[in-house]
Amino acid sequence: MPAIPHTESYYAASANDKRERPRLQENLETDVCIIGAGYTGLSAALHLLETGFRVVVLEAARVGWGASGRNGGQIVNSYSRDIDTIEKLVGTDLGKLFGEMAFEGGRIIRERVAKYRIDCDLKDGGVFAALNQKQLNHLRQQKQLWERHGHRDKLELLDADGIRALVDSERYIGGMLDKSGGHMHPLNLALGEASAVESLGGKIFEDSAAVRIEEGATPLVHTAQGSVKARFVVVAGNAYLGKLLPELQAKSMPCGTQVIATEPLGEDLAHRLLPQDYCVEDCNYLLDYFRLSGDKRLIYGGGVVYGARDPADIASIIVPNMLKTFPQLKGVKIDYAWSGNFLLTLSRLPQVGRIGQNLYYSQGCSGHGVTYTHLAGKLIAEMLNGQATRFDAFASLPHYPFPGGHALRVPFSALGAWYYSLRDKFGI
Ligand SMILES: Cc1cc2nc3c(=O)[nH]c(=O)nc-3n(C[C@H](O)[C@H](O)[C@H](O)COP(=O)(O)OP(=O)(O)OC[C@H]3O[C@@H](n4cnc5c(N)ncnc54)[C@H](O)[C@@H]3O)c2cc1C
Image 1 (cartoon, rainbow, N blue to C red):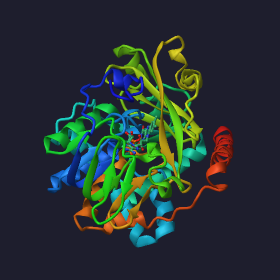
Image 2 (tube, rainbow, N blue to C red):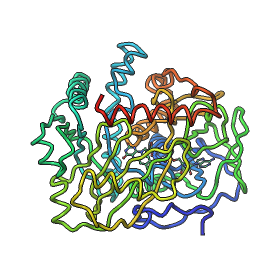
Image 3 (cartoon, rainbow, N blue to C red):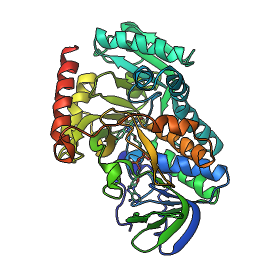
């Protein structure tokens, strides 16, 4: 029995591969030691192995145990703050580069799934649903923005009838369909990527938390019962990294979000709710997101707990939202409810960089991380292969500590969220 099993979710129950990997109990040498077997770590591992590096991945719990194995499964393009916001921070030239990269993560996922034959219920198509006119106007601008950055032929604005044909809910006044969005079984994606890592000779150890890093020309990463000496270390622990590197902890805050899975709804009801099997997220700051699973459950997520405490009764938070969207699901049984942590930064942009000469990190994508983390792994591999331009672009993003520092970041952020939830409520 591993020290920390997967959280009890629909994904853990329907995982393709329940095999446990060994704990590190020896002293190894390699080219790159990666800390964390979520999408960031696994994507970096795969890209590095494909370019000839030797790789060891250390995972504190199980492959995909963190957000990567618990998330909503929504493949959403771009970043948690959009390209225009980034452009204002970094200028037009770099902004253009961010625009080019904004749609790459989704392509990487599809390429991985095809190349390594990963069985993860991958489906194309994602809908952004507007609850009010302001949100619909914003989607219209977002479409123009994305098209300006080369994301053409994939986007379609939806009026009230258009969205009603895709989502059987009266809540929305319109939306935008992104045909290159999509969804999948997130844990099976991570497990498939882990098998791909091993098929290329990479080693993955579970139940093997990195507890200390001795920095130097060849850093040494210690676990409780072993160590890895490497030329480079990639830190990919995100919201679960804790105090391993205090400088990474200072500028970010773990936040919890919750997901439920209904009982299987049957083909007819599932088809009525989401006739094209697209995933959906609404445009609120504190957003709801939902989709069908491979076996036709509704997977519905939302809710944010600042500071990452697990709420006592997840279903009581999420079910009322689900019934607001789909009152026709009253009485449907909830089979699973779970939560997971993502990492919030004040700017809601990822933190990427280097510590010393040879420790690289990416963290804090603040919500939309499924596509970004796949890109991040590639950028880290490019960096270690001597192509720094794209990694450096992310590393140049400005970051600020939370107001009030470590002690007050939770109340300040909760206050901010309360303000935005009022704006959501009144459509202002
Ligand atoms: C409930 C939920 C729903 C979400 N829904 C979506 C969605 O639908 N679409 C979307 O785009 N994004 C979504 N996100 C965000 C997305 O899942 C994350 O941004 C992404 O998975 C982060 O990947 P990661 O590899 O950086 O971190 P994680 O997946 O959290 O992986 C970090 C791993 O590092 C390990 N670790 C930490 N410290 C150590 C250590 N010292 N030694 C060894 N291992 C360590 C952890 O055990 C963990 O397995 C959601 C997040 C949550 C929590």
